[in-house]
Image 1: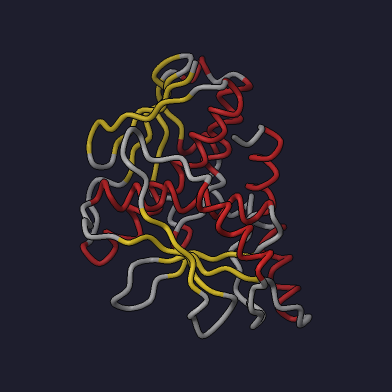
Image 2: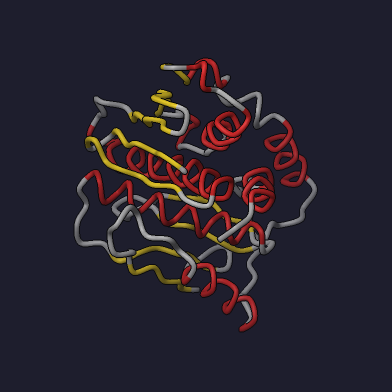
Length: 235
């Protein structure tokens, strides 16, 4: 289990990589990747997906993905929830990552190391500096019983606010239900062509919220209310 400081640091350092170096992982790095995969906490009370790493990819150092046979919305949410845990842990270990979707392929995590070529360094720094400004303000995505928005609640929700999403859509909102309970709502009506990535995005934001809630209180719980609405509670 990561501490609050580690979760905040991982989210703060996490930048979607646009330019990878063509570097093969040595055995030590492969062990670090395997460790990140083995640490995955399963989604709700489900069995964790079968994640694996392969270096057979034309760019970067390889990819991480899970074997999937069921592509229903809730399984894609699980995919994003578990995959983002791997991304955050790899970030703490110094790897660069990017959620990527290729035509006719399930979204995957590309990993490796940043290519230092000046131009890409500048673009990467700019994305980092302006990342917060490019996210919706917390007040815009939070509703419900806002009187319960104390320091812990704000830290949890802000970690969700900073979650990445495809094309920066941020397709979610947070409804405060009580002192230690929040409903996370994903988009209700989604064009079929966006179903996969939007569902994975919902899993990613759930991962950020869950990890921070658990690091703050020691225990957190997710419950599905529908395909695109989940309850997060902590004690």
